[in-house]
Length: 208
Image (cartoon, rainbow, N blue to C red; front, side, top):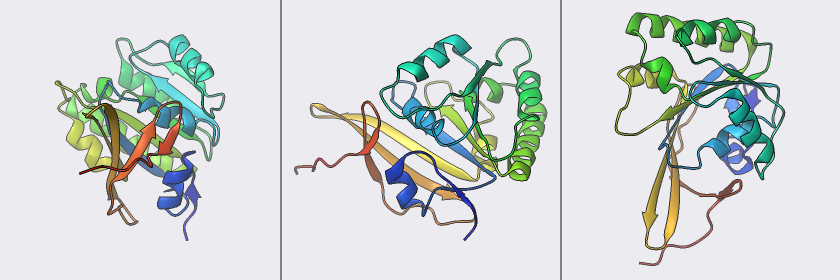
C-alpha cells in the first residue's frame, strides 16, 4: 500500500485505511459558521505544519490553536493576505520541507484571483506537495459568495471532504462525505460527526 499520512482524526483515518496518500491535496468544504477549523487544528498534531492564513491575523490563528481543547501541534503560522496573496503564498509553499503539512485557510481569497494565475499556483502547489511527500489541506468556505475558481480547486484536489452543518430539532448535526478520492476509494457512507471540543463520531441515534 502507498504511504498514508494521518489526518490526526482517528475515526477518519480508520475509515480511510490509515489516512491520506502522501503527496495529496485535500479540499475541505464547509460553511463559515461551522466547527470545521477543528479538522485543521488536529492536523497540526501529526507532523510539522505550515499554516497560511488569509483572513485572520497570524496572531489570532496561533492563539486559537493554543486555546483549542484538542490535540494540536506547534505550527508555523504566516499571514499571506494583502495585495499579492498568490505571490506571498507561493514563496512560502516553495520552501515547504519533506513530509510536512500545509494548511491554507481560507482558500477563497486565492480563488478570487485571476484564473490563469490561480491555475499556475495550483499546479505548482500540486507538484511541490507530491515531490515532498507532504499533505495540503485547503479550507474552502461555502457561503453566499463562492469564488469563481472553486471548480478549479475541486478539480485539482486529490481528495474532497464535504462537511454539512445543519440544525435538526434541538441539535446541531454535522455530516461528512468524501465524494472524491483520487487513486483510492471514496467513502460510500455519510459519516455523522460530533464537533464540539474535538472531532468525534456522533453516536446519537435518529428517531423517526
